[in-house]
Length: 387
Image (cartoon, rainbow, N blue to C red; front, side):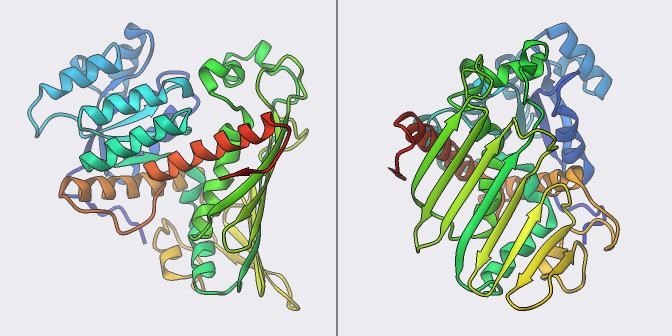
């Protein structure tokens, strides 16, 4: 159980690029990183407007001289500081189009990174980041935040222990409804997501589809795609990128998987679900009820497994922050991930590798490849493509 005791020799000295005042995701990054005293925010380039970014950083308690006008200046100036004082890790919380350049610069400067997804836009870029991280012994965490919920680990252990039998089907979906009209015409925060120059080759596949994909990859450790077929559509005709997509996947070993990603599912808040169907039983996790895992054994009544239950596998209970019966949410899930990132970074600093899973640079690269293959299939008229 997580109870606030320190798990590191010292907090990771940490900086942010982006995530400033008005950011949709800046606060959850800071809340998650600082929750367990595993990180200490000491620097940042928080805003494209240097004065606004400096004012914001000061309000967060960052020293004025370490509130930088841009990330390049920050990396250069921090490198001049003594090893005991300079930053050790950087969170990248900027629009998608900047992820690759900032992450590459952070790694080249010798610092660990936590990057929003997508990691980048192309497989070539992803392979370069993988090589940089691996060759320098650096950690790159990717914020697939939902994977920090405890019952994702429970589902993983049930698959590994054979509770579901042979895995046959995996059904993924993340179809929300907030963009069922042209909201980008008046909402700047939505507008960049529809712009290929800033969002990349995809809207809903990259923005939401990769979330249940990583959950499925975590729940089913041998999840490996052999081929896929994808169809996409923009129901709002002014959009240059898809707002709805369906994907069918054949997996190595014979299982099949599907994914529905959408932004026009009227009335749905999130709708993110992952269902794993085996030869003996099935499990289903729904992100709007993240503290419960549905467990269905053929011929028996449906069971609801609750977060914190004594019947869960030990590794699923290890990240309890409060006893069972109390609900935990997305901020807790992100905190669990940031805790994993910190431990992995400290191990890397000592020349060791983490012996636990977390969404790393390889997971980020896999998400990039999946989007790329889906777009390839859709552009060719929804044909099967080898993965």
